[in-house]
Length: 460
View (cartoon, rainbow, N blue to C red):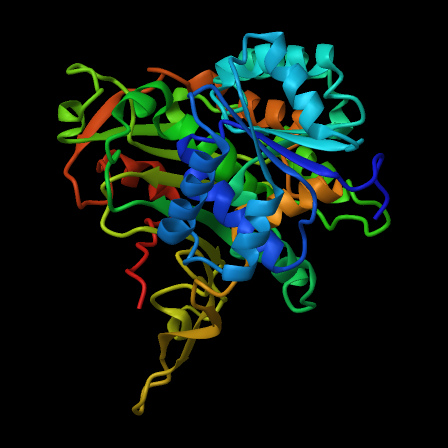
């Protein structure tokens, strides 16, 4: 695959002592080394008064707790590649020391695993110190808090890095099951003839979490369900489900088709949204006692395209729901013989987390004399989680190679924000709901025109 720069020859990660590095980055690095995908210097940078030895111990603890244990050979190699630069991000001397550690590396990859508020400072110093020359940069979501801030963030990044060198990482896009949406859609002949307004009644996407904010009340007060998972994760799922077939002749084709879908989705209004908050949220540490932040959101999307005219796309996401899973339900229109088809409609169910499962809802004859059907579900595939490559291993490896297919492009980020921008904040009323339920009953009214919500079950 042709890229503007050769593979990266150094991996630099800011925030080396932080939570993200501990839970995700170190395990990904060991896996990359084990699979012979990483042979270059690894340089950690942080402000805490640490040493290389302490960072090495941090890496060991990370792999024991989050990396499935130490791989002796891979971990030993990780220790030989690991470097450490201590210093304040505000000071130019920190970046001069980074430049020294880079040595002969000519195409480093800089991963900003730090709060977005620090991006402008770090990016400016990377440029001034020469560390950004022929380099790539990875930035973590959130990519802004709304459309205006997303544009400002992009302008800041582009003062030093060209868009082709910017990798906006959303770990959800690195998941095996999410990528399977594209393969399943376009690698199966039987699907394309029915994947349109003529046969599809509605599409539902549910992202349910059975837990609450888990001590991250302060973060959630700044985010809420729409900013946290709808604008990014779930909008990407909508894009993969609704996109047109991508061209196979150039590597930007998938990202081009995603942008087209986002631009065809009408901006949301208050009537398209139901917001909810689980009872007890306001008692969480870091949460305002009169908080109006949603922990649940249900949305109805309209896609103005030839393929999807008249087909509603519903999104539902929330915390403290009955199960933890992400599932797509594509309901097909009823066949004309109502007597045979009485009951549940045909459907396609795609479970993305915690495991990949694809099933087809069909009707077969009910035993007995009557010529009537009964519902059954045929499992096409079921992949238990645990065997696939981790999302961060895949995404960091792709960034090192310069393949941006699985990363969010700025025009897509802005198009997705434009959809939800009108309903951010308190544009719609906030409804309470009991923990362990499927959210406020008002969400049922949102979908009533086409039926009811398909309730995912707990994993087997």
